[in-house]
Length: 204
Image 1 (tube, rainbow, N blue to C red):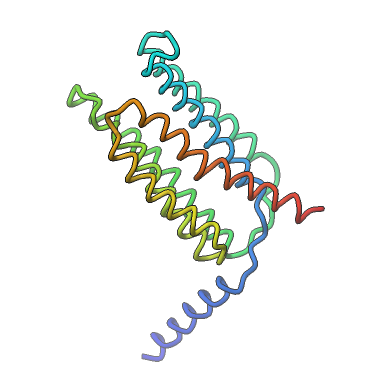
Image 2: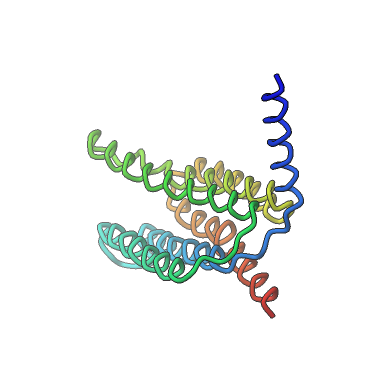
């Protein structure tokens, strides 16, 4: 019984420390979000342009567009993660763990989706992927908002969830790729710019 009480006190102390911890703006996280939102948003915009025939190109071209975006993002990620890690508070570490989990989940889901598409000879399963991405973004932003007590992160989480539902509603329409580009801008690029600006202001 005493051990359980002690454990509960430790848990409460950790939560209290998380709530009171003032998180330092993270320029590295900001750069990664900007890279993800910009590169994949641009790929989605090009995809929409090809599907809508604004760009005259074979449909197979979209595969190379997304492949280029993936390669470019991994390069940007490598460059962003180079060098010594900045000091992090407990709240920052918790939020970063959430984002890391989202990244690995998306990587695994992408492999699973491709495997299902291959086995079923249908790419319909890929139509749900943008909604899944935005839902996981919403989960990560929810954690970040909870541990940092920043209202704008909570609003970003809500926007991510709402946009995920919107993506599901238009998943089989050409406009889906345009909406996805806008969604990535709102849930990754813009928040990344905010984090980068805050980090630079803190260093000034």
